[in-house]
Length: 223
Image (cartoon, rainbow, N blue to C red):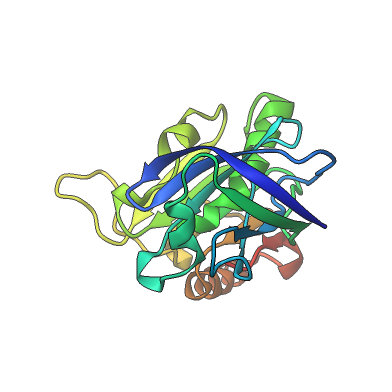
């Protein structure tokens, strides 16, 4: 089913990521972690849809998204980053394979963290704590980390940030999500949530298997 939405607010999160707030269509229901397809209602773009994940709670009156723009792609995400309040999008969905299956290790790369934001926010809202859950979040640089302060403020959540390239004097490690590193945080019986760029997901999946994590314990969403 398609819904038309109006942008109410847009603000930067990082140098190429925005937090967008839309009015929520009547009757639209979704579960944390599910995605939707957004079409920017501008000439030349109405037929170009891309999947994104609401990061708001299902009971909230607005729909929020955190969307990374890729200007070099000359695509939908670039157009979304240029939106202003009053602009409209068409939304289709929801859909998606990621859902809350209990506490676990949330392993994300870049914008792949967005399905996990909704799940973590909902669990925190319902339980009051995220005790028993960890977030392992990989990014190119420290400036690319989405919602770092919010994650660090989530009660009970153990947050681990790694980067490809660290700033001089930074405490963040330059670290790949390989078997040895993940082995510090993942036990064989852990539930593991996974989303990020395909090469990262392939490498992490292999590392988790080496650590004894079964396929049935891995909850993942294609990036």
